[in-house]
Length: 276
Image (cartoon, rainbow, N blue to C red):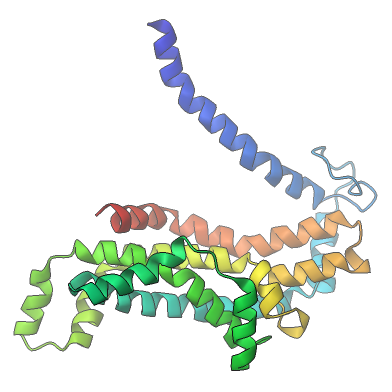
């Protein structure tokens, strides 16, 4: 019995310990290396810096790494993508949740198939070239919108199905148009899922370098992760791990703030959309 009780209480502690090691060790490595001088950071390790110089490292990362330009480029791509994912996802989810037919069911299955089928990057690049959107922000916005729209539709459809139809029927009786019903009834009730989709899309798109590399290709329109790849490959950041990790810390701060503010919304939104 004592062994059973010990395992019952020890298992959560073991899980937390393993999670803390898996997350905490890399974070500690990044944090301490970003505060070291170049001589100490050639071979990154977990030791504390013998000489602290976080101010100079972060200033060099922001200035020499052209972070302000990358930050603006990321905003110009991520914010429109989030808005489109939310608007298109909410509108499509409302139709999928309220209409019952084989055609609608087939369309819903096709829309959420993006959860399982990875995007083919070569096909995406070729299509963007045919449309004249390769290497442009609208092309990148279209890619992010298409990639994350499936997740938005999936969670929002499950949530809307749990909303009583009587609310919408009462509004129709009062003479409300479909657009008014959607704007005044459906969207306010979707706030938990909208918050979840916003945070998830921002986290994924903000840290993406793979698709940004193929679609944008760098240059003046490079987002923060892509800009980091470029400067880390250049002579400026060659073996300068203190600057690379300082760049990573500064780049991550906006998304850390977003996650801390909205972490409760993530749990409630996923639970509401997937379980209800």
